[in-house]
Image (cartoon, rainbow, N blue to C red; front, side, top):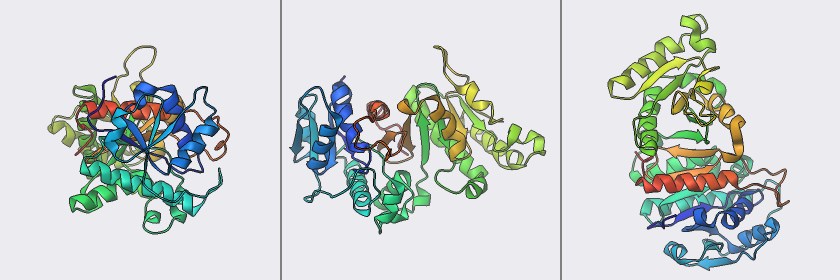
Length: 354
């Protein structure tokens, strides 16, 4: 695997969860994928994680002073750029404000590094939403990574977050789905099913997935209601919002079709048994509609990609797993796929940016 010109930064996530452990395991299991990567935070967090992982080989944690130094390190060597002088006190599997602040400050540092061009991509290990809320200002304002990164990027560009639309894509080897709305109550998600929001999602999907595949993507649009509304019998969102958005997208060259009944569209899009699915990506109307099928097919290989940011950001498609944190049994597969996908996007010169 070829070297990158600029390294990829890994944020450790909540240290009371599995984030540091899966990062350490990724370095040990896939040295080619993790080459040119480094972690930020305090080196002791990664040293403890490496000990818990129980490696078959000695896994050194090397402190670097500059991101570019990560490019010169040998494989199976965890590079840590120390961004805090104070080692953090936390208990594995327990929510704490200190751990939430540690995780969030790492994301903020990584975003600034990406915006300045010091790194080529960000791969984020899981944060815990309760710990993030407990961390206080300014981190408690954000439901998760996506909204935090959007706010940081918007501030750097001198615009409001609403002027920098972003979308969440969840992907594994069988299915891709992009969400119209993200972390909002279901009642608000239904209100967000508007023509302008759907059309913006289709534009972002066309650019990002098309760049990744290097061709015009086939996009399916899920309905909101059972049977995609059944001609208005089960709701009018399809008639009044979704159909006009699809028509407007097709007018600007987007290969979109829909609305398709949400209970069948994901099966039609699924790539299985060595065959491509009928569609390259599905636009889902709300969070759980899109995430349940992707996670059911394989959370171990799922990747979360934030589309619309002025830099590349991916993450594993799972949480902090407090129930198994500290036991050394967490699997790094989803994180490895997240790093692999980040490398793919970087190789395409930042396709998922605006």
